[in-house]
Length: 321
Image (cartoon, rainbow, N blue to C red; front, side, top):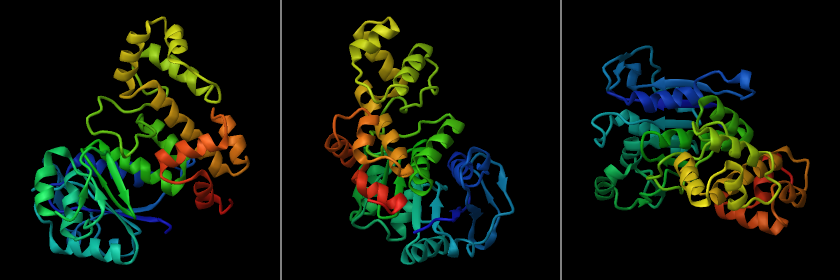
């Protein structure tokens, strides 16, 4: 469904970071960056004032009536973190799911989706600290404790606090396209794409070429970005940095949290998504432009890591095959 209205549901003592992530992504005017915005509101039962758990207050909140017509509802963590939230908030989540709206929980906010009965039989994730308690309370949920975020039929969940950024960028990719998500990530100096299946314990996100303080690595990442259509080897990259291969791999992992092969694959698929959305090139030509030997090779990687085929992805954005 189209998503034009986004509501963040809060009770008292909300996580200021998680609330800020939702406000930054969906409540900030990004028209100067070419990103279409959303109608946005932070809502509480009866529009009551709330507090952050850092001590400052939140006033001017909307009531839950705004959420009644929102197509995306987001629940950040509120204290007590795993406790049952107010019933009006749960009713708003249930009503949203019943009418086909998307619902998302950040970190311990995932418990709210569980209390609303929205996670039975669904793949979801939660911060590893809460995994045991979450499983005890919601045994019918299909918990993937390693995932940064999960998207199961419009019911979305994220793990630790920073994973809320990953989930929001995933949402922007789905709602506004890969170019919008990449532009927003660069504006936020965040990773343009960490897959939901990436382990929670990675040391650092997969960055855009300019999102690392390691200037040697930043230069080689920019170099790779300019030649995604060409073959690249670890030996060649190590030579360009003046490092030995083992040292290069350690530095690369420290800067990106992943391997050169995985980083390159993600960037190539990002480019493929952008070209599929543009709709001008055939899938065969897109495969060549993204460094794949054939459309079949692109199709294999795209389906494996994006969960859909290139043709289906293109149809979702353009209506073309």
